[in-house]
Amino acid sequence: MRPKLLRHALCLILSGASASAYAVTNLEPNAGLQFNFSNPGARSLGLGGAFTGLADDATATYANPAGLTILRTQEFAFEGRYTGFDTPFSNGGNVNFSPFDASGVGESDSSDSLVRPSFASWVYPADKLTFAAFYHRVANFESEYTASPITIDGGPNVIFGYDTSLDFAIENVGLSLAYQMTESFSLGLSAAYSDFEISSVTTRSQQDPLFANQQTQFGGDNDVVFTAGLLWRLSPQWNVGLAWREGGEFSYKASNSTLPGNAFHPNSRTERTTFNVPNVISAGVAFRPSDNWLFTLDVNRVHYSDLTDAGVTDLFSSDESTLKVEDGTEIRLGVEYAFLDMERPFFVRGGVWRDPEHRLTIPNSITQDCNSSDFNFFGCIDATLFRPGDDEMHYSLGLGWAFDRFQIDAAADFSDLVDTYSVSGVLRF
Image (cartoon, rainbow, N blue to C red):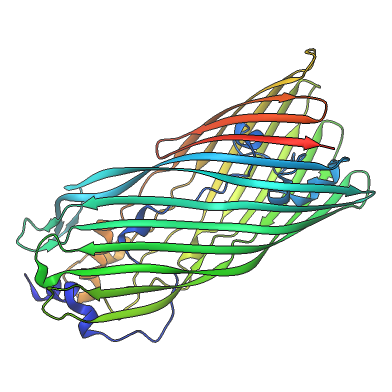
């Protein structure tokens, strides 16, 4: 094993804790970490998540709190979701460093799923003011897999294989207030206590117990986050909405430790790092050409770069990792047809939206010469494990059935990497 690669296995012994606290880490399970900033509720999901300009039910607490002024009776809403993830990861094969070429590296997917209550709210309208209390599971992701070693330049040097698992969740509990300034213009604000939890374990012991080591991410934190929205009812047919959603900043710990059997055991290094959830700016339009038809459009700017703007903690080096992620723009379209002639109105919905690629990746400038420095060498290792993906197209379908004081909705959203099924209900009293 060349000295550089030996250092990669044992550098936790050679380097002390860094003086700076960076955001997120370069541990492998973070390569597939998936966010989904779709609005809550099966109705919204069936519309492709395009709800900012409509915002006419209790899920407006997140989508656009200004829309709460549309509601004229008390409402209780609840949603449950099933989410299935396919998480891609680099798995075996060979990478060339002279020049850099990762086309020979294998890629596999791990499949995981979650069933969770995802949203609940209570809305109380009072003249021009509307109050709401809500719970929202903003993010929830799990993955578990085993990756095989990857040879470098045909060997004998190797990027160690590993076993890893990750559990990540963000839950918000908060209050909303909306005010109808005029008959056509409303504004709203939501404030939430946001609870963050992360737990991951990555173990490298497949090749040689002399170099066995383990990395963990662990901890919980909380923050207060805000969502602000505006809604204009330009005419009976047209609505325009704007919303800003704050993600929050959370602190947790990450560690790198030797395992029994390692020639340098016991030894460990622990860093405190931050996780900055991306902020989102959303603009939406809703158009009703008739009582039966509804069309919605959302354009969301997701500030994914918030994840890495403060730097990325490298647990294998005293240097900061060069992993970056670019901001992305989601475009969402939805359509609904209402069968209003039925005794109980029935709704059919469809949607499509583009999820921009937002994996952590290494800039090309690092991989142009992997062997020019230790910094570039380890950057090329990150580039092998953190590979760019593609934009994902999502397609959704939904149904709804309205009763005098109750409505039930169901929807499904499909893409190559994430499938979501939702059932939600609204009780009016």
